[in-house]
Length: 287
Image (cartoon, rainbow, N blue to C red):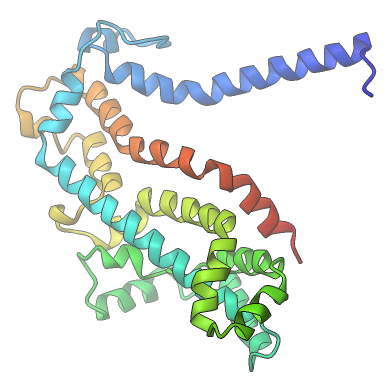
């Protein structure tokens, strides 16, 4: 039983104060943008710390949602995030599952090749030429197919699958289940924690994928939210569209666009949170 001494109480209070301050410091940048997005032009120009909106207004959000490009960017980002996450997680699981079978011919060599890609890569120019030769320039597939399988995710998935008793697969085989049925109906349901963890990693990565979008997408109709945010911050979009925006309102528009772009990820995380810690720890420490 823990000693309830003065030193332990001071330690607990010190930890609590530190964690509260850390949370406030971490949360403030987001709160700052939310406050600016609901503030008027005059309120934004005052600067300083934003403890809340100044002269509350929805004008910045009206300017954001008036743009047709924000809806196109939303559509494109959702397509990339949903399709990419599904394909990435499925192929990662399908790669990791057979690598756990010691009787697979060349399993060690295949595992070596997968790990090798974590250390060495072709680089940006060869990758760009490959994407170009495949005809994926100005296509959302350019954000999904390259790097579809992550070697790190395969290792995490493989480590988690090692913890599944082999007797389960043997029982399924005795009952007449083939490899595909065993994989989809037995193994995958048991891997929900690590599947949810990898899905969250991939979804966030694809949603925030700026560099590949900047390299491969030139047509505005194919822009994703990170690219549109870049144009908004640079003053090349929305302000020019409305014609009614003033320079002092640009900060509010930028903040509103940032808030709008992070809402889907903020709504997705709570549904996967219960699996996240379990999937990360189990997938990382199994050997």
